[in-house]
Image (tube, rainbow, N blue to C red; front, top):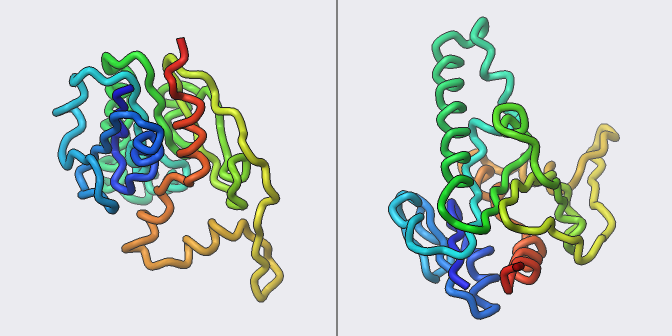
Length: 206
């Protein structure tokens, strides 16, 4: 099966499919973190190359709910208007990926603006359904694919800080990272989820 993993620089999902014998390629504007088949450039340069499956991880900068405050024009004026324009372009980018001439497509993103500006996701998954104790609500919009089935449900991991407040540990730990690397750590696909995609979406369902 020929698999395109769009907007991925980590190689996690790409390598999960490669290990199962598929012809998989990751694509991103950034170079790959791990050596392997990778196209550095615009995904639409290669989107018509006869893929059987595409898994897309479009950037969530303008799509995530966490940035909603920055769209307030009364407070942020032109910056907010520019951000709204960027959000509209981000939604259009996602729709274009989903509507590509590829029979099986999965688009992944956090809970955010896609649900209101496009459509509700087909499912929401968590890392702790796939062997990781972390919490990270991840939406999947699916075309021609079944919903992912949990593979290993584990206890969620929390951390209690000095003042007694309790947080999901992964969210707290990654929030404490420098901004320059925080986004990259938060955007990575968990290995258990990548393995579930490769196992459950290949061979391709009829």
